[in-house]
Length: 290
Image (tube, rainbow, N blue to C red; front, side, top):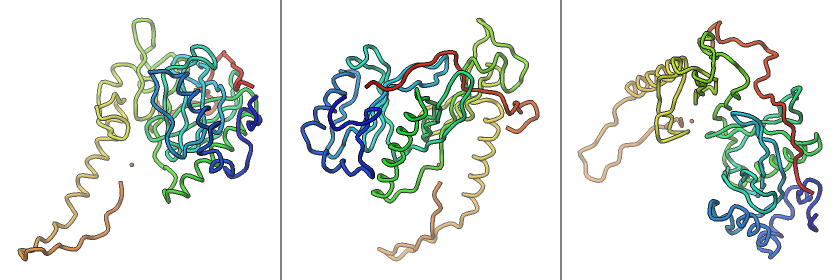
């Protein structure tokens, strides 16, 4: 293990005391350059002024098909992860998440997956697990400290809007909306981008524009489509009720503006047993390299 790095590959100094010290050091530049080299041309440049690599490790990401090991790098302002081609040498499928958009939620263990938590952002939310409870505590502690530091620095409030995590394919053999269609080789599973449910084609024929997630209309289930349409109609009616601004004919006069407010399944057939485990797998991976 590299000098200056503690348990789980993290720098051990409370309240990011080492960040300012390391920001412009050669060792920090070398560490970031090594990460860039591992991602190669497929990755984005990571070296920017003031950015510090705080730690890294391997976590199990609960993906749509099955849980898979992913390499994670924690910087003082972003979280980077990718697929492992050759550990410590080559990674691909790089993803970069701004920490000020991140909210964490600890999840209970399942029979197959232990030490789980959810990483929630406005564009994507997903579940990861660590090899031990200690490693989970380390990750969550350092992530939360970085997030608090960033929000204090920028004056922003914690994010309240989060994308729904996708329910893994293996969590259900039938459509989670109509509960009638049984999935098979010929009958494909689809995911609603609003609620994350696994649904059949007939229950997800609609598309809806959700700019927070994508510039293109996304697949949504019928229930979410109706809810989104109702919300859009309600917003349009509220806009129409706003008083028209008074435009003065006097040159140079600017009418005063009021305070503008900022904007970001409940059928019986949709109720699922409380003990249903949507995030399960039969694969376990050890996290972090020493």
